[in-house]
Length: 217
Image (cartoon, rainbow, N blue to C red; front, side):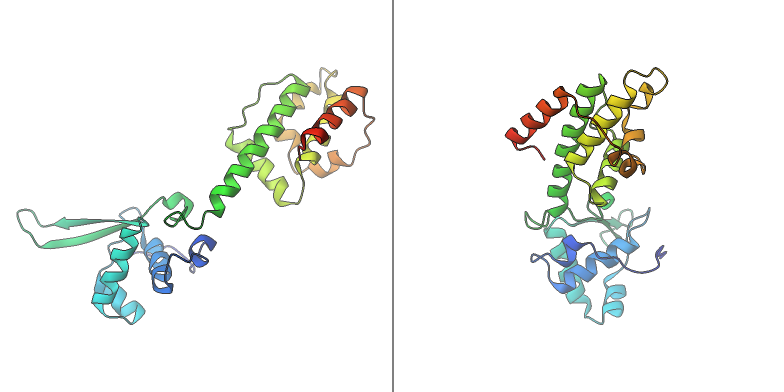
């Protein structure tokens, strides 16, 4: 079996889950590390030797993970025979490292994604209204840029301010107007744009008052 890794990373949704036992957690990450293009086909004997457990106990843990819908199991049999030739296991939704919600329990990733999506909608709606554009909030590249800035500690208000500053500076400039786009405004130059001096127009002041009344971030 091929193992393409330099260690084991345990997602916080797995490590902090109260719906998984410690054995289930380590089994899950071990299956995940072996889940390559062909899936994980490690036997109970392999897990028994690896974890120092009985084969029956390994079988129980694996069946529990399947019951909790964290892995899928497919049994491959010899043609015309009932005996099992190979067991292939797959981690569910591997693109999100297998764990998104353990039986309705831990769901921080889902909440974080919803927050990012909502903030992206707000920010893109504001940019489109101010710059007369039609950028889509569903763009992965735009989401990644906005998420990167949030990870640096910036807020929705900071995005609004950068948009106000650059729209005032570039909107009426034929050469610069084309740069009123997410990949420019929300790039690693974001902090520099944010610290530019900006003279608010009466419209900007009114919009800010409206946002404060509505309680927008």
